[in-house]
Amino acid sequence: MSTIQIAVKIVGILSGAASIFLWIVLNFFNPYSHMIGTETVVTTFIMLLLPACLAILSSLTSKQSLMLIAFIWSLPFSLYLVFTPGIFALFGVTCVAYLGCFIFMKSSLGRRHV
Image 1 (cartoon, one colour):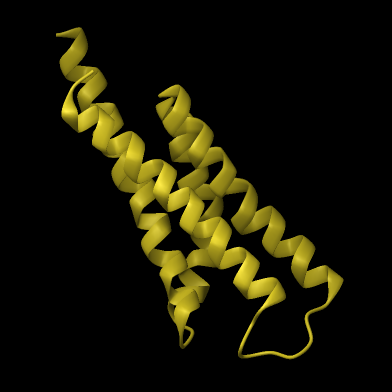
Image 2 (cartoon, one colour; image 1 turned 90 degrees about the horizontal axis):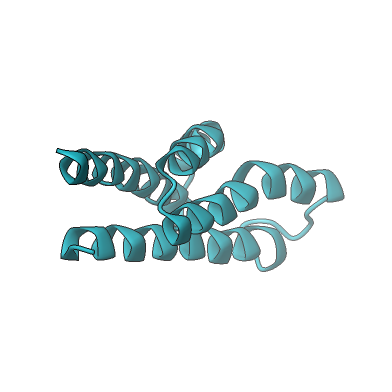
């Protein structure tokens, strides 16, 4: 395994873990809102936390298609949160990291088969 592949795995795992941490802060320790409804928790769970878990799984198994799915799945909410003030704009960074990991996974797999 090359150093690029190891770095991509680490970035994928860290970006997924960062999204999980941000999701916890968003839903349970949100400094911008005093009341979070159950519907909000469920929606953000589906749109932000599950793709983060998928990104971690993709990094651990080197399945590039899962990383692309995680990126596309989390993109709408991440784009929305990019334009909000504060820490939650970092969801956009983690989403872009999913895309970057997918691209590097794809390119490193292409080089391996040549």
